[in-house]
Image 1 (cartoon, rainbow, N blue to C red):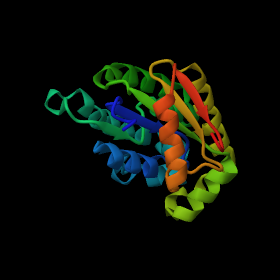
Image 2: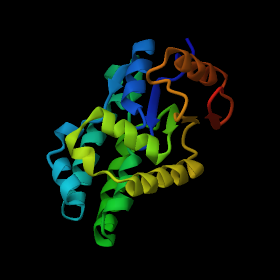
Image 3: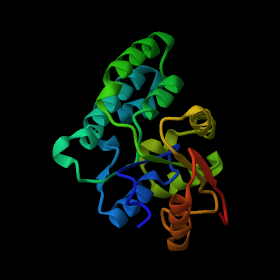
Length: 213
C-alpha cells in the first residue's frame, strides 16, 4: 500500500479543515498508531475562547507540554516497528502563539519551544489541508463545539495565512498540500483514493492536490 514507506505522517491545517477525520482514516488503512490532539484535556482552552488575552499563554504552554509528550512516541525504541499518524505537528504551537501572545510572552514561549523541540521526531510526510475561512466556519458550526462559537472569520483568515507562510518556507519533510474546499478525502471514499494516488506518485519535497487532481 502507498503509505507503507512512511513511518510517521503528520496532518496539519487550520481549525475545522478535517485533520482528525483524515488521520483516523489513514491510520486505519496502514494499521498505524493514532496520535490525536487532546483539546478537552487542556483546562485553559474554554477560558481562552472567552478571554484570549488573559489565558493565551497558559493555553499554549499546556498544549506544548501535551504535544511534546505525545510526539515522543515515534522516537521510542520499543515502538520501532510501529507506524504513526498524527493530526498535528509541534510547529503549530508557534503559529498559534504568534497570533495570541504578547511580545514578552512570545519571547518566553519561543525559549520553551526551542528547548523542548529536540525531543520529537520530524515526520516522514506532512499532509497540509487547506480551505477558505467561510468553509472552515461552516464545518466548525456543523460539529457544534460550544467553545468554538467565538472563532471569527478574521481569526481563521489570519491563521490560514500563517499556515500558508509557514509551509511556503518549510523544508524539513515532504509536504502534500490539499485543497479541501471541493475535495474531501476525510469523508469521501473516491476523494481518499485520489489522495492516496498522489501520495504514491509524489516526487520531491512539495506537491499540491486540487479538485480533480
